[in-house]
Image (cartoon, rainbow, N blue to C red; front, top):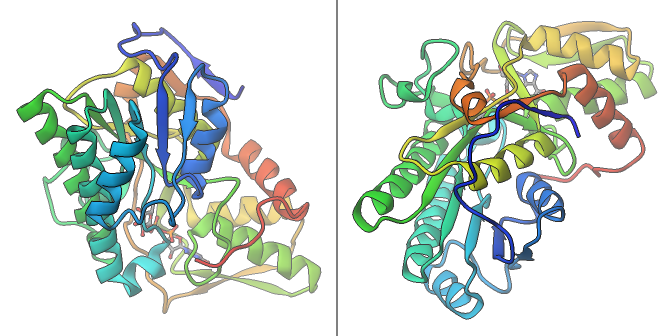
Length: 326
Ligand code: GFB
């Protein structure tokens, strides 16, 4: 176990004997949650797209009424890296709004006892104070490359708060930082930076290339968390947290994109030069979450980025998380 628990706060909700729906179980986050829930005494429910198309309200209500989950982890979402967010604004806004509104409303109607909504740190203003506290939400303009996704995720947080306020529903929201790990998207057009650079470095090594191209200036700062650690934190929050405020989930470790590229090249064993493509956007200059609320509850990340990179590259090179298109 790579997570370090400090002072454990009281259990406010028990998963024991519960029927737990992981919405989005085929995605990177959803599949990590399914893995993590194997060590809880609960039964895990999943729904394929044929069972219920999550952007269709009627299908979601029908499936939830028939299957009656007591707990919902809402990990279903349209996701992607900086270029995908920038290229498909309608899909990022519409699909995410529909999925979360349908599931949260149906969870209320079917009497779900606990729901955990998964957001993203891109909900925060582009120039938020660093590290970013939960209170920074809606205090300034968003980063333009991902404002569509951010608006949808902010609406998800607000839905949880509104149903809690109006109906007393125990719906909470967790805001993960940039994630990586098994099941990631390795498509170079739509992926996030970490899988993209891992793949580029691997292919550059195999082809004995002299250079590796990194998008943007290399200066932006990012924080990365392994998806299995995120899943552990989210299950922890389900059991130990009930409240109005969303909670940040991050590693607390910050690295520049250049630093990440260098670390990846070292892990992969590619010793060529880095080239920076200024025609690609940098996005948010800095994004480090303030994880003090999560730590006060009793959860802290213990896996270093370097450790996570080594593990992820070993899996990638072994053909584990097969590259898939976005
Ligand atoms: O991970 P990423 O795509 O998204 O890009 P964000 C992070 C940074 O890495 C940007 C740079 O400064 C990119 O310019 N970068 C360098 C690269 N090389 C590459 C590359 O080959 N591929 C990619 N993708 N980036 C996302 C949001 O923002 O963060 C999402 O768009 C979500 O909505 C996610 O919130 C967590 O970190 O900029």
